[in-house]
Image 1 (cartoon, rainbow, N blue to C red):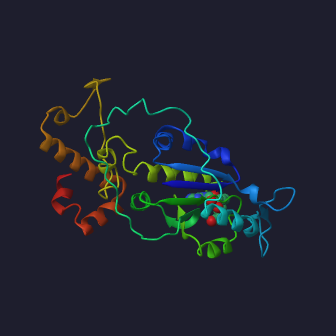
Image 2: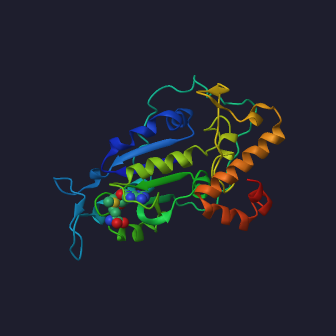
Length: 277
Ligand code: SAM
């Protein structure tokens, strides 16, 4: 997969060089390009914004700068310039299991066009289902807005060379799109086959089956007077699985009842599961 990010703060994307994303770059599973939008500015001040049409507070990012930037990035005229921060390959994850075949998610769209993801609070909510579908993409471009956002005509025009998705990471307003790009990149890249050493790590995660994951524990057995639930030490896999499922349903019922309604409708859980939790 190749990811390109266009931003006026390239240094904000530094975390993409570290940990699992850095390792994916080093393994050649991921290429990342981070590009300063101001490289496409037309004046000597390298301006990228102007006052909003119709008046009002703040500034709006200019189509005359964004248009050429998106043209060049769609055509890969700019390099994938982000290198992994450090050597990761000699440090396998503790949960890497030998002989487990990496499994790809199913591609939802069949298109030659790159995917343009535009972070915006006014977009459709980003979900785990999006992360799964987009983990199969070959080329994803992120357009980071700042100020009041980007002139809407940029995205109308971009539809000629991209599949455009306006996406929100939550019902709150950030200062810029960079943090949203980090959030989505992590969610997407960890699902690329081979990026996580053990694919079960994400198959059992929250949202993968429509529910939240229950609590997890590790050694020591007793810590500050608090014990690991007995069943988890029993070695009985059937009982452990039932315990985890019931905890997952109980937690979801408590904090995300909306997910329970959906899981019942989709048959992921039964009314009996709900009663036993
Ligand atoms: N005027 C915009 C509105 O009310 O919808 C808010 C603009 S915000 C201050 C600046 C930039 O931050 C946006 O263009 C977007 O890139 C990013 N941003 C803010 N909140 C976001 C969210 N919840 N999800 C994704 N991106 C967000």
